Image (tube, helix red, strand yellow):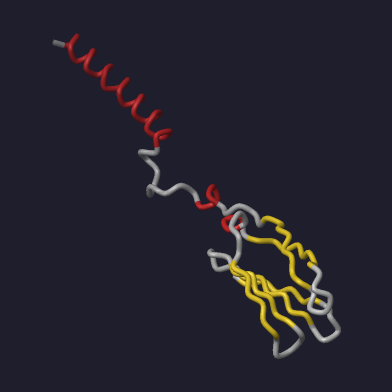
Length: 116
């Protein structure tokens, strides 16, 4: 009978050691089920070139802006209209809510504003 107790005791000790070492790696003893927040950081913004028609010459003028990576591959919706302050306002709207507004002043200097 004592030999059975020795085997059972040894088996329990080995099983307990295996459970403690493999359980920590498997996440059994971690608090919560979510991964750390820093492992899923959003990707950095992507530089994109947008073209806007010059209000006086009608030629396309390139502008480089930083767009969030989640909407960098999408084509934005483009709207142009006369502006109350300045000559023209062109708005590039992305589906993710990011907007780029290019406003030409009376001296024909562009002002680029981003939002979102």
